[in-house]
Image 1 (cartoon, rainbow, N blue to C red):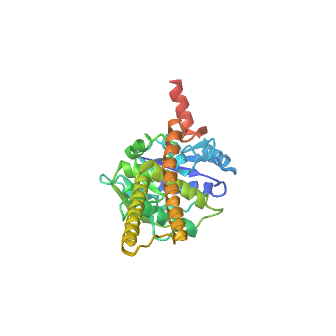
Image 2 (cartoon, one colour; image 1 turned 120 degrees about the vertical axis):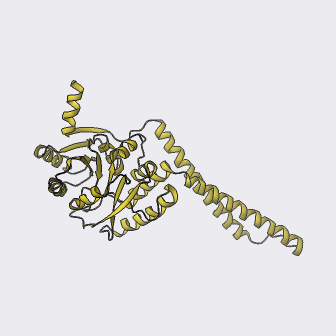
Image 3 (cartoon, rainbow, N blue to C red; image 1 turned 90 degrees about the vertical axis):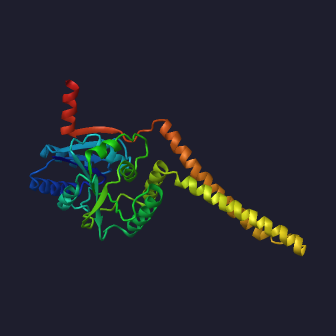
Length: 319
């Protein structure tokens, strides 16, 4: 059985070699598996791709893929999926925080009744806003994407090849790997692994990028935001109707013309106006993404391939 390990790389020149070395050491000890490592450089600003080139020269198990611009972690994973040849696909981070030394736990958990295995961390060593973001993301994926409440999702997971082949059919510009997994199979479970401190540098995910990632997932794989907008609109309409009934009854019983209260009226108008603008923004986000997809915006663009994949592709083209 062959294992394909896909790693999206961004600004990881200082620690990528250590991560790959740990993978090599672990996989060499698992004699029952063949393996390949696919490193996808997401247009890093440093010398990450040069490090990948040197790793490819040193080890025939490694393939390097260079993207033409920064498309994001999930697009980089989708690019790597196009070149996997293994029976099981493992995805992990490039910074060493996802321990390759415990990769066998994920492989052992894959079975006939389990298609995907996610690593679960008891304690995450990310920055506070990343941990908070993970909790918010978990709640929102439960509500919008139907994730089971007890399922922990992370960037470190193993999946059977048929799951990845199904995920590859998604060709639009806003991939969200968690959403693709959840809509492909329900046979998912967790295994506990340790989460390490970051070796060097800082995470490539800022609050802005995390928000953009959530937006990608929820607008591409769920219509719940639109249903929420409908609910808010219905509640506001109901509140307006009740207020109107209140004003009529007060006028009939007390003869109050209701001329006073201009400030409260303006507050209500501004509040309702703000809600309407938010709802229009949600609808506009969906329409904008539909427009981008209709125009065939690329999910990723591969600029260069080095290693075994390139040799195989060249041989196939010649034949």
